[in-house]
Image 1 (cartoon, helix red, strand yellow):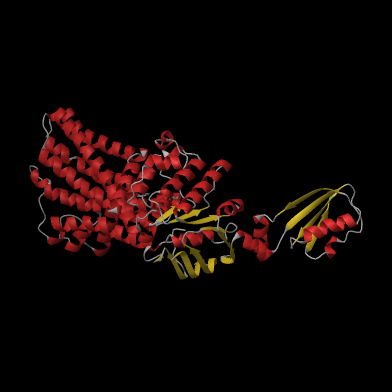
Image 2 (tube, chains in turn brown, red):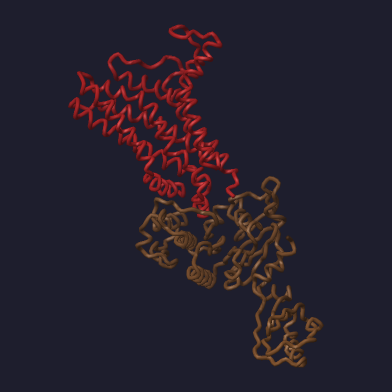
Amino acid sequence: MTAIRTERLTKRFGGLTAVDDLDLTVQEGEVFGFLGPNGAGKSTTINVLLDFVRPTAGTATVLGRDAQAESTAVRERLGVLPEGFDLYDRLSGRAHIDLAVDLKDADDDPDAVLERVGLAPEAGGRSAGGYSQGMRQRLALGMALVGEPDLLVLDEPTNGLDPNGAREMRAIVREEADRGATVFFSSHILDQVQAVCDRVGIIDGGSLVAVDTIDGLRAEVGTAATITLEVDALPTELHLTELEGVSGVAFGEASVTATCTDPAAKVAVVDRVREAGGTVQDITTSEASLEELFAAYTGERR
Amino acid sequence: MRWLAVARKDFENAARAYLVWGVAGVLAALVVLIVAVPGLVGDFSARLAFEATTQAVGTVVPIVALVAAYLSVAGERESGTLRLLLSLPPSRRDVVVGKFLARAALVVASILLAFALGAVASLAVYGTVPVDVALGTAALTCLLGVSFVGVAVGVSASVGSRARAVALAVGFFVVTVVLWSPLLLAVQVLLGIPLQGGPQPDWFLFLESFPPSSAFGRLYDSIVGSLLPGGPGASDTVFLSDGAMLAVLAFWTLLPLLFGYWRFERADLG
């Protein structure tokens, strides 16, 4: 069974098309990163899955059930960290977890849940009105974890978390995936996704522009591994761009950086520099960052 | 039973709002003062003292109920707590039903508290508590309060922002409590209906009693008034009978609530 399937999903708000003919499939048990710049349609898609908004056309199925007609049954098996949520300022953190336990018919121990998301029992007893942004995010994640959901939907989960908090969040995502849960994780911060996701989908302008593993995306774009050689003196007459698989060259004072679309081109770059009389002192290489991949997929549309 | 869990948490949260305590405090102070003052300044009957609260209560309880409930759904929608709640399993119907029950319970509790304090004042000033009149007054006041909670939750569910909710709640109060009599006067003059004493058509008398506060007043005169020496009695027209007035209060409790739910169920909560 698939965890999430949308078919020709379209949502328009007045004249604005937020989601455009979206076909998306997330398999059970995978950690799926849903990537896109702000305003690309990520939240609208998630809002349809949660039945917060109703599609203009097309369908959405979650855990084998219609997201609209069977929304309550869907949400019984879901753990959601929604975007743009607020807490009940006058209720304690623990009361929030209690609410999730009650409404999901679960039997979790609220203190254990609070501890798991990094909130001390003392903090759990305080009113949520005094919580920092990071604590709010942790508490909402705790509510999502109640009842061992089959599917976790996390909309921009690292918003407001410091790097430490973001790392703990990723660890929890991994634990949940190991337990067998499917995780659907939206973000515009790409490093988060790179670290935890089995597959990613990139959405832009309301449509999916790519779905693959991170390695697969890299191979497909074929981009942007770079090699930088530090040399004692820059040789002239390098003609590096004539080499097969080299797409760009940049020079520093005593360095040369080549962008290689084919990994094998790196060795050719080193050979060419040496042939031209340069003494190579150091070599550094870097793979395409997800940022660059992301730009490669979404850039052309703007 | 998810509506019950929603109602419990909502009661807990709303009962901690200062504004709700403020208006409930005003209500309690008014009831205590109106009951106690006539007996303190002269010779007065405790029964009539409780009866004297109805005018003030008929105006203040609607305000207590509107304040306690007008943000119940719209406020959560604007702030985003509704997203948190609806990410959990309850349906939108569970939310509207739960909110209505919680806020109705809150208003009923503050009315009962006000009359309990009124009873204490009565005991202190008159040495007695007219149990039948006090209970009758409190019970009918609760019906009035609940009908305004229905209006307020209905209004709140039908709109997406606090500003609209407050505008509609104030508008409803102004039209049904403040402006109803002048509006009817205009109708009377326009249609040439006799102003006082003369024969007035049944439909006009019904219209006069149609706002929740007016229905409460007529029901009060009929039920509690009959307990009082020389008080007004029940009306003999079907339109103005106790049953009709109860139906009017039920109408105000349920119809706005159903309308609000209908709008809420169809809304995009994006």
